[in-house]
Amino acid sequence: MKQLFTKALLMQCCPALLGLALLAAPAAAQTLTATSGAALTVQSGAVLYVEGGLQNASGATLTNTGTVQLTGDFTNAGTLASAGTLLFGGSQDQTFAPGTASVASLTVANTGAVGSNRVFLPANLTVSSLLTLGQGLLRTQGSAGGPVFTLALPAGGQVAGEGPGSYVQGRLQVARAAVSGATAVDFTNGLTLNPNGQNLGGVTATRTAGLQLAGTSYGQNPSGANKGIDRVWQVITELPLNPANPAAVALSWVSDDDNGLNPAAPAQLWRADQATGPWAAQGPPASPRIDPGTYIRTLAGSAAQLGTLTVSGTNAPLPVVLTSFTAEPLGADALLKWTTASERNNDHFEVEASADGQQFRRIGRVAGHGTTAQAHSYQLTDPAIARYAADPVYYRLRQVDLDGTASYSPVRAVRVAGLADFAAQLHPNPARGGEAPGLLIRTTAPGPARWQLLDALGRTLASQEIVLPAGTTTLPLAAAGPLATGVYLVRVQQGAQRSTLKLVKE
Image (cartoon, rainbow, N blue to C red; front, top):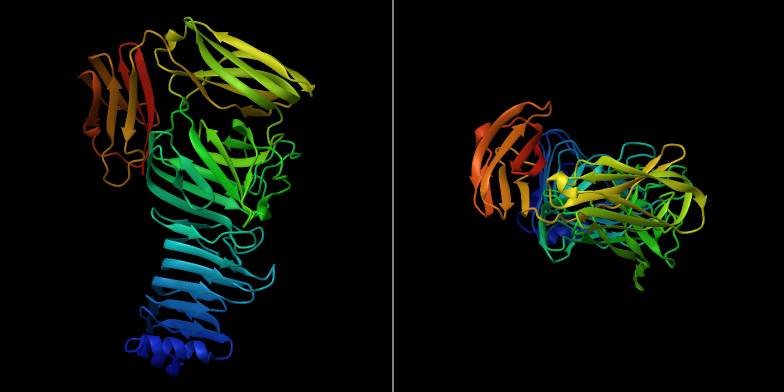
């Protein structure tokens, strides 16, 4: 062990020579242990090659700005600051227990046979710059049936090299700091998102894949007869998406995660609040594009709501195949129409309306056709929609099975004639640390207005009477004072126009 520490010190004076020496004459497979008090440094350009495992004990420090390459397990219980690359290049399953590691670049290049070429990650880990899948799998689950951990890349982080037989099984989270305009943003974890001219602020996309866990890595209908691909994406935005202006979404997956889907047949983009459902179709069915070199499948579509997204065949995971749902003005009313291609155990539809696109209430009920393979058309009229004192008014369908299981449709919006253009927005939201949230109000009709801040129990914490000019006004919520961590409501009213917003303080 003394000899190994001496070599580590040599890296500081001639790192390139030491890197070649270690690569040319590896020791017999063993575990290299840095004991408490030891300090190992791998400088830029140097390679520390370990034929076997590496253990960084409590009280030891490993600083790496070059490359640490090993063929066995890596257990870190001390201080690991790796601004360089950690490379797992074994020929059998490996485990990386990162502890409180700081890692910039992580490469998986395991050459083992299928079933023995995995790098297990039994804890959460942040990789700040680059995750490279050269060969083999990285699995964020230490053991079958155990907890699923998250490998996270902050804004600016990239994933490279994923393909069949070489990708992240488990949770892979990628963040982007600012998603706005009409340019597609690639999260490099199989999600590409174009906000279609809107400002979504910071966006985090967490992909769960390859675990064969219903309700975790894939969605299914309530009976379990139909299921989606073994890959879901949970998309969380800082600012809300306007349901009337759907975002363009493309989801990609490897053939390993088809989960029974026929990629040559039309497929459907689906959305839910969580991977357990209920699921709602987003946009029309389409045929996946298959890359001729990697066989990676990609389905492009549109999403009126974000949340948890996945792909399946056109008959799953919903028990009722909804082929269209429209909402349009009819004089002072709103006319809602929808059609189904087929139905199974469909008891009825409930039509729900919302003034803010967030809180919905039932306004009507239409009976379904039970089980049928024939197409059916439905409609309902919502009278005098100016009574909502909001523009637009949002609508969705709640489809209810005979056993009470419910699924939701995409959201549609209807503009209301005669009302001033009025909108309110919070930014930043969520508010973190010492950030002070502000209230942005846009109106075409100047005049008096009022806002209120309420806590989760409905108690008013602050309120203010104001006079709004035409255009956009930014109001600080400083009158409320510092906010504790939690969820709050902000209510804004100008004449008949009202808006209720949810504010999260982290």
